[in-house]
Length: 130
Picture 1 (tube, rainbow, N blue to C red):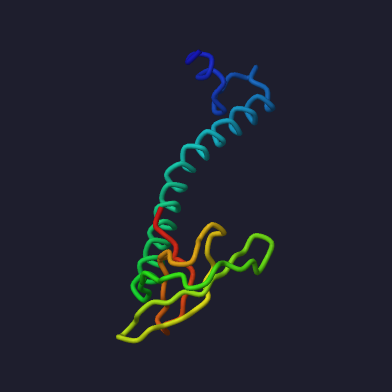
Picture 2: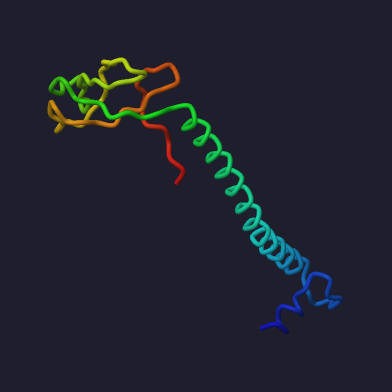
């Protein structure tokens, strides 16, 4: 097989090698080289993208906090698959009330984790680094 490939090299001086054969093998060589180069380039791009995402997640999580909030009302359906309930937690020695999205099966008296933004309002849970 190696001898066959060597005899089909594009720079082979053999006059019986047709121009179409030379073009065919040249395209195949370039396709193999492109494939071999694509793997490390894709790996480098993936690493860079992941590192940027991890930095963004860390920055976002640095400015938010979480608190354990007591559910004080039964959940109310506010959309096709959306339930909200009023909750209460303590922040800076003061009680804070807010409405948050909760699972349907939450009942009054249970505790839920609430993510609090820099301005003190509830936000959705920040992304996680996968």
